[in-house]
Length: 459
Image (cartoon, rainbow, N blue to C red; front, side):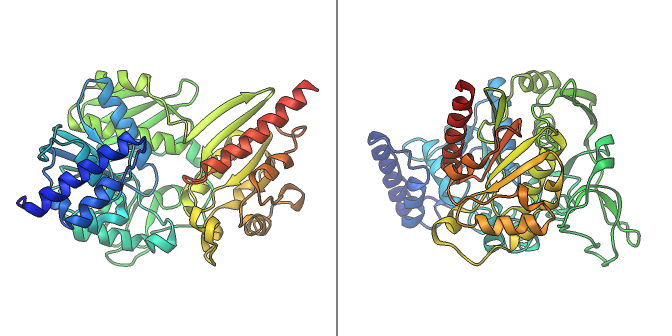
C-alpha cells in the first residue's frame, strides 16, 4: 500500500505520543500503535517493513523462543528490531515498527523478530508478510478467547502469505501441517528413554486423520498430542524432521541435534521437556537461517531462561521456586505439574495461575480446570497444594476430584494466607506457580513465605 496523508498524520501523532510518554516516565508499550491504527486503520499495511520479518507464533513457548533467538543474535552482533518489551498483537507490532523507524517511517533495521499472537492473525497477517513463520506448537488455550484449536488454524491458514517459509514443530501434527503447500522446515525430538514413563493426558487435540478420519497410529506419544504418528489408511502424518534432537544428557545438561550439516551438541538451559523444545526451536531456526554451529553453540553457553519464567531462590534450608503456569492453558499447566512430580523431594505448591479478568470480575467459565491433569499431583512428593484467588475453592474441588487426599489440599483466598498455610516442617521446596498477569500476587506470597522461613531460622 502507498503512504498517504492519513498515514503520515497517524505516524507523526504516534511518534509524538511515544515522546510524551517517555518524557513523563511511562512505557506505554501499545499506546502509540493504538493511536496509529485508530487514525489510520490500515496503518500496518502502509508502514514500511524491514527486509526480513520473522513471526514467532505458538500456543506455548513463543516468548521464550523469541527471547532466546534475540539473545543469540545479539551475542553474534546481529542488528534487529523486536517487540521483546511490548505486546504481540497488532497495536504492539505497530508501536515497535514506529519506534524502529525514522521520522518519515523508513525502517532502521533490516531484520525484525516479532513475537506474534496467533489469535490476532486477521489483524496482522493481511498486512505483514513474513519471510519466516516460526511455530512452536498449537493446542487448546483460553477457550473463551481462542475457542477450538481448529479455529486458530483456520485464522492462520486464511491469512498467512503463501510465500512465507515455515519453521514448525514436526512433533505437533497440527502446527506442522499449517499452510499446506508452503515450504517448511521441521524440527523435533526423537523418542527418548524418558518417554517410556510418559503419562496419558486428559487432552488430545488430534486423534484422527484430518484427510480420511481414520484413527492415527502413534509411533510414540510424548504428551497430549505431541509425538510422531501416521495414518494407517492414507499415510498422512509426521513430516520429515530436518533438525532432530536424538539424545539428551541431563547430567551434563546437553543435547545432541541431528541436522542437515551433521550431528551437533548444544547446551540445554533448563530441565523441563518444554525447555528442550524451546531450545531446539531456536537452534533449528538460527541454523537454517545461516548462523554457524560455532555461533549458535557459543552464544547458547551463556543463555539463561527468563527469571520471570523459572527462578529458584535458596532461603534458609528451603528452595522457593517461581514458575510460570499459564492461566486457562491446560497443556501448559499440566506440563508444569508433570515437571514438579519428576523432580521429587518434598514439595508444597502455591497455585496462582488464575486469569486476571476472572479475578477482577468473576465468570462461570471454569471448564479449563477439568482439562488440566491434576491427577499428576497425587504423587507422594506433593505434600501440599494451596490454590489461592477468588476461584481457590473451585481449584480445591478439582484437586479433590482428581484423587488428592483432602489433608493435602488447602484453599486460601489471599496470597499471604496461602504462604501462611505452608507446612515448613514437612517440605523442602515451595513452588509458586503464577500466570502471566498474577506476578504481583505471586510476589506477595513469596515475600510472606520468605519472612516465615527467615523467622523460623532465627528461632
